Amino acid sequence: MTDIPVLQTRALRCERDDRELFAGLNWCASAGEIWQIAGPNGAGKTTLIRILAGLHGFYDGSFTWPQWLQSDADPREKLLYLGHKAGLRDELTPLENLQWWLALHAQQADPMAALAQLGLAGYETVPCASLSAGQKRRVALSLLWIVDKPVWLLDEPFTALDADGVTLIEERLRQHAASGGLVIYSSHHRFDDAVRHVRLGGKQVELA
Amino acid sequence: MSFVATVKRELLLACRRPAEIINPLFFFVMVVAMFPLGVSPKAELLSVIAPGVIWVAALLAVLLSVEGLFRADHESGALEQLLVAPTNLYLPALAKILAHWLLTGLPLVLVGPLLGYMLHLPVSASSTLLLALLLGTPTLTAIGAIGVSLTVGLRSGGILLALLVLPLYVPVLVFGAGVVSYAANGLPVMGLLAILAALLLASLTLAPAAVAAGLRISSGG
Image (cartoon, rainbow over all chains, first blue to last red; front, side):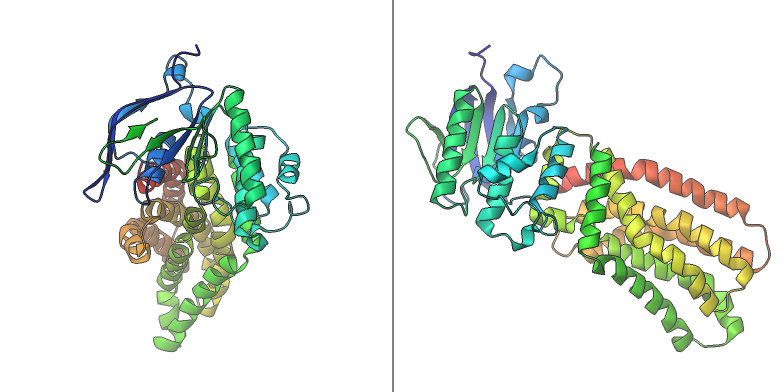
């Protein structure tokens, strides 16, 4: 089972407004790996993550999740996607925002402990409008502790976080990979030599 | 699960932002109040135009309020979370439509007969007006939601939404205003009310599927 890749793309190519973002992306990602999607601004990092999350349908080539081809489960059940917008409604409290997410994903969990772990104890019932950008990011990222999904697709997860927050998330990403999960994140920040990367924006996509 | 959670969330959001409930209601009342001032305060004229005026005003109030159905969710990124969730979008979409109608459509229904009284609509037609609005406004919300789902990512979606949706509102307007005129003239109304009820059932069952597809198209899926 372990040698079957989790994600496999074949000649994935995407263009936007007649400009080619990336082409010929043949990529295999396996369980236990952390992949950084790197590249200059406008290189298509967000687009690639959105394609993998099933949010963007305008691409050529194909990608599959080979481990789950046999089961007829919806691949979305295996994915945790966090976009570059935190996805929180300002009028609702962190707790209410998270509870709606959990209901959509049909997951039973108590978000309180995860929020406390991210330094948000006492903010659970404050409307998100009065939280700072970094705190909102922490609320969204608390899902990494709450939701149990094998593949994480994170778009710019370190945005607006302070140094402590970055360390905390890095640690969590390592933990997830060590326990057999797959992490794919887009960022300029490469936090570990073991992190592999997909570099977009050049003439050819670099995999390393 | 996703249905109940979404209804709860929408009601909570509305409690935190009450202007979104009250503004369409004020709009409705003010548009109707313009007609005696602009056309003529004569009772015999007003009672003839009352059904049409009330229905057109209600239709515009629903159109204005429904425009914001997905806007804040789109801007905050919550809509993306809805789209990646492993749930059938039909139920959350239905929940959004129903919650939105409860908050913005139901107040219009309750105020409608009062405005009818203001426009000298015979009191005997008030109950029919109430029933017609009760059956018609959820249809308007459901049809409007389809248009909103298709225009959610666009910067100037408002006018496009009106152009997309207003033609689809015509049957509701025709039967809704028609049934009130029938009642004012003492004619039987059950047939037309049944047509309004049929429109409601059809739109409530089909619109959520169309909204789900529209949201996927808008997001680029």
